[in-house]
Amino acid sequence: MRNLRLPLPLLLLALAAPSTAQTPGVELRMKWGNPPRICVIRTDADGVSVAGDGALEFNGTAAATDCPGGGGTVTDPVITDDLGASELPAEVLVGASTTVHWSADADSCSYAGSSFPGTLANWPTSGAGATPCSSAAGCAADHAVNLSFAQAGTYTFKLTCSKAGAANPAVSTRSVSVTEQPSSGCIAPAGLRRLLSGQVRYNSTASYPARTADLTRFESVFGHDQNDGPLRPFPGTINLTQRIMLPENNYVALQFTVPDNFNTATQGAYALEESAVNDRPDKVSITISKRCGDFRPTAAAPMTDRCILNASELNGSIPWGNVGLTARCQLQAGQTYYLNILYASLDAPTTPGCNISSCGAPILNRKTGPTTGHIWQGTPASP
Image (cartoon, rainbow, N blue to C red; front, side, top):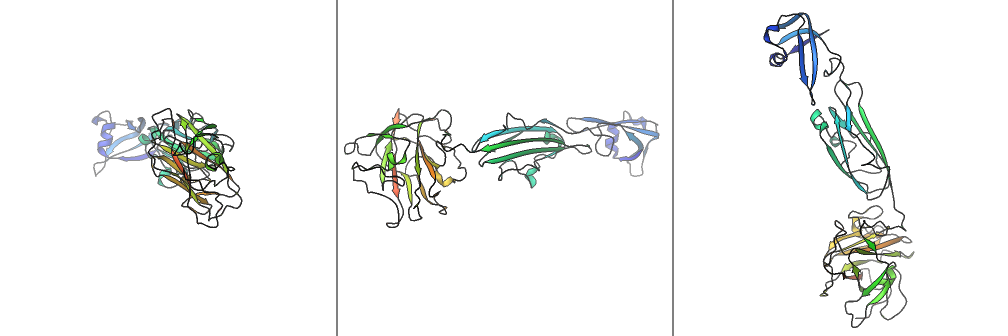
């Protein structure tokens, strides 16, 4: 038996008629929540009385279900759209993204208890953002959360929803294993094709005719010697400009290994040169990555965004240097990388950046390090 004290307007709405005052055994029906529930309260033999301040008072008992906290039993919350396998598969590659939808019949929900290799944008595990809803209406709404997996490891998602007065919370969990693609495999977006062999030109084809080159190796392009000398491994030939002719929706991934004697004095850049050639693409994207065909617009460890040039037209460049040179794309001695080149935007990789069947951007293998203490080789002849 409880003594309830309710404001007069609320109770008058719940009463069937004003004449029920002082009538024993009055049944009160209180609507609350979203979706609405009806909490039934029945007074004892003394009925309802009016207090001196105008409030209605009565002694009564609440029904066993559908009453808010403190009155009877509240039904447990339910996660009506949970963390399913279709949106959070058991295993994905680094760089994958997804949109998770969830909703709940609850008063509040929390992301607390989730654990990730690092901070995951849009799914905070602490602070105000870890409580994405704090009302019945807010929790019942569709929550569309965009997620991107930029780091390898195990991602454990936990969604816990509660309801005031309910005995048990509702919990949905899901674990996702995010793995690196082996360096021997290419991870280019669907619709792109890796060109293994093709035509490479200089700006002046009259002095140096186009040649067919192995487009899987860095030295075949940027280590070339115009005087027919041996191919030079990374960092290649000093200040050599090359134009790789790429058909629509093709890309190249030039593999190279940083030599053991790599030092901070050896610095360079891959730079787009101005040129009046007619078959130049409007958009050029270049990345340096541990992965072949890596055209993700945001770099994944161990690379940084300094290793990405996205949809540049003229004068764009990627400066590179040794580990610790944070203003450059940092390369480590003895490690193998790919110089990935695509004539399109990384945000729309299958939309060609040139309006003809094949085009080529003048890309300069620029030496930016000091005149001594570097490992560059050769000086190209003037075409």
